[in-house]
Image 1 (spheres, rainbow, N blue to C red):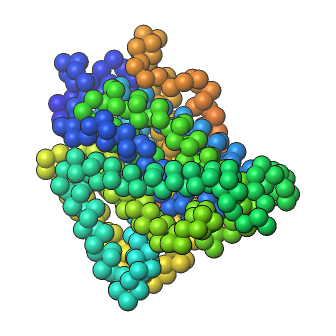
Image 2: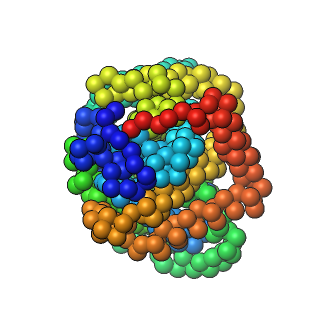
Length: 472
């Protein structure tokens, strides 16, 4: 590519030789696409099913966990947004970490993100096959897996615009379900439509052990599940570099994060807790099903099945998109095999096909132990997710340290509360790693995550990528 690189944070960092904006592929996403991607990026199976486990761990105090986790996500996305608006470069955060933290950091961040996306895709593909058996119990699971891969594969291979359009449809379904649940729950509370023998209202937040029924330890235990639910929000940074006007589209998308967290998590979980004593939210059925059952919607299970399948499709669609762009960007800087950089009409075809191939093999292996896979996927995905978030935050801090006062003042989308918000987010993520060390059930995920870092670092040295010159 025609751009040149100076020292991180220098005047020409990320800019072309003539001082123009950094080179990137021709944009294919409009502002509306990025808005819906931002809206739906954190709404998935982690909310529809994982919320029950978080409630059981923390009780009503899970609301504080969602608020704390949401604050971390916001500061992470503002850090990513600051860098993406300043340098809308193909490769997104893997490229930023390479520029500001060094080649190994960019290498390990990109591959960790790809690892995260693939394991989540594997879980969601298996989930879709299981969900479809609700209606078609006699149909082989591989049929639904193949159909899913064809849909999302075609959307990702066709064009960036196809991906964006499909994501709009998925997001409308997911957001509609959450809003319907909130409105339905409000109706139950306002008109007393529920079972008179079931206590409802604010008393549910303090009864049966109080707001912290399992103490601080219970609240801390919920952090992993809550952060898993927020995983994938960093796709905004990848998609933003594909937008027609990143300088306007990225800030608008990122600034919706607080509203999304308050509406789709805190308010939705709050309504669930007001309608049901927290001990009754066992996870045997989704809390969302309980709401619709109370309203007399007899087909609540079928309705939720549609929503969860849509959420899984959306996750796979977005994960393939994000991982493909990041790995292709790494290939252009010699941090991945050069063949993965090949694009057709701006689409990283080789990378996307390679990932689809991995998913086909992985799902075939996943059939044998689907239940065991789901027990570790949340913690494993959380390790990869918060690792990537930490690298994004550190890269943004490093980029600031390399700027002059004039460059800092000229930032179009600076992070708020600098540097205290960033320090809070970094400390919270380090604390999350500490939880994984402290609690035995997360040791497997921790070992796999650390093992992946070690393995990829060895490959980094063995393949000689540490000696290759980077190109921009």
